[in-house]
Amino acid sequence: MTKQTYWLADPEGTRAPVEGAALRDHLMRVNGWTEADEPGRHDFVWLRHEDPALGATRMTWEAAQLDAWAGRGWKPGLPSEPAAEPAPAEPAKTSTSSKSATSGDKIKE
View 1 (cartoon, rainbow, N blue to C red):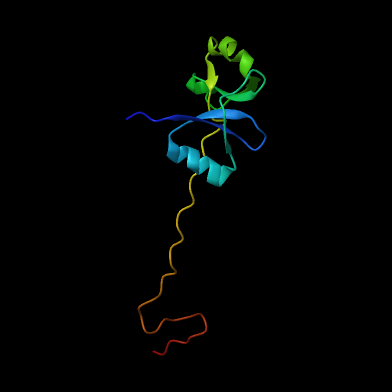
View 2: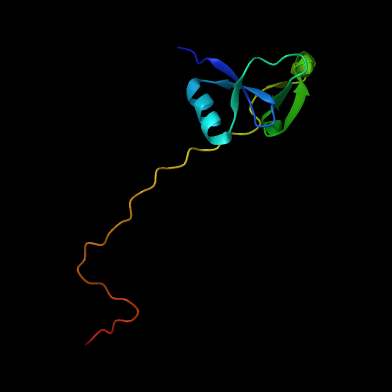
């Protein structure tokens, strides 16, 4: 089964394609993105470069220019790696020993 591609818009309205419902839901919940239609001619789209050395570089361009930039190695993509989901909070650990020494306790010899 292949992942479905969704178009999302960041809080400023710039669009990016997202692969899979899980990532889509995560970006919407954690990063404030919203579902969007495929970009129109004048919509701005996030672009990433296929060269690993430039992978972190990103630009926004009007969708009308996507074909011209694709020939130079740029394609629509997320502006950065999605923020990791926060880990669930762990309950506080309790001590099983009956007594413990503290800085105020004196040890008798």
